[in-house]
Image 1 (cartoon, each protein chain N blue to C red):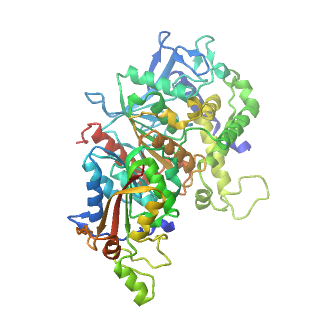
Image 2: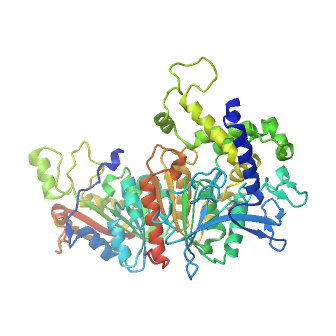
Image 3: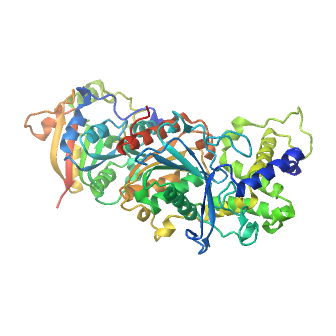
Length: 402
Length: 217
């Protein structure tokens, strides 16, 4: 396991960590600070104030302000959808889906993506500086929920002068936010595209998240969440959390296709606990690269937010009640090999939407790529997303891109 | 590929000016401005026809290919199974529920039919008539399970597991207290048989039956 932490050269490690820490308070993205007059009312009862939201936007807002699409990122994603990531230097996380001529066409739509509150890329979260102490919030940061994230996004949308979003789009935790948007602000969402998600987090998913959190907190470098002051970062714990989570994002078939039982740069097993298998080496790399760009406490808070998510529970146990009378058009997409958010979860959402008379499309995409399929090259998924948005756009009165 | 994706219940049905004859008839039965659920909507041809007439249409389709092609046309279609997923729809949520050329492919036609009339205030059902004289002749003279242009599958690979005749269907409607508002038999070319004839004639010469149904009482 020591490999997780020791793979990166020492010098590079410090630089990236510093860069990431800087992003928490001073993001390279656009950002907006909501002052004492505009606190964020959190579900836990705390008013968060002041707080900052960092966001990226692509394309141009039309004169009617009617072509805005809000993208909601997943657990370990951020606002850097279609630009080089300021910390990793890698391309944005959804360049397959977003860009000129892509299904979410930046020539046609004004695309916004903000870092969720509780995140670590410039929106206020546990790694941001607590104005009361001048130190990072750490575990003093209040526990946040998916509805809190959406409330903050709504404040950003207000700030940008947009009354109604043409569409809200997201996968996984982003899909949860899409559903939350549609229930909390139905009149502000014309179309909702919810991908690889559900209206609640299942017991199995909570269990996996708990495993991840325990791994982080078991790392002595975590220091009760005050690792910034101690100059440490729970790299091993967070790395293990990421490794476990990453398995849930793939599928048996995908792992087998990608790695099989092949050995890593060796002809024979070493009869040790070294990374003999390619799949071990891959997972260790996933763990070690993740800790470079992500804050351990943010991981605790965001996984917690997902665990608490249960739309039906907020509506007396009846999911359909959450969508009653909605005029939003929905498209729900699931993937056959996704075992984190299996199609049955998507179906539950679809049944509720049907029961509340909503206009909904539902497609299950055949793929062996598991939960992460929504981030990968899936032509059928792209075709459906494009068609759904195009048909909604023409109903919404948006003209085609020239 | 999944077994039920590889074939459709019926082959290419005859078209009149590019539109299936039974679709034209169904569309004509639906009042303008109403809300319609098409169960087993296939590639969405009927839904497109209905939406073009200003009808608010929704669909359920079993095959993923069908669903994806519908969504790609901008139609509101969900992947689902008539046998299991209709239970999830609330009472009286649609003006019409359409079951076009699908009844014979369901596992529990009676339950499906009851569901149609629970969800919709009216149901429109069309199916191939197994009592057509050519079917009877094939079984009587040929001694084998009938196969036609519209139903080309062999007995061992057909998705049609509950064939019925027009007479059988009328009996079922009686049993479950369903009233027929309109009944039309179509000929081999998808044209309505425009003659006032007794049931036995339709049962003998109708290639397909199309029924507009309501709850009795």
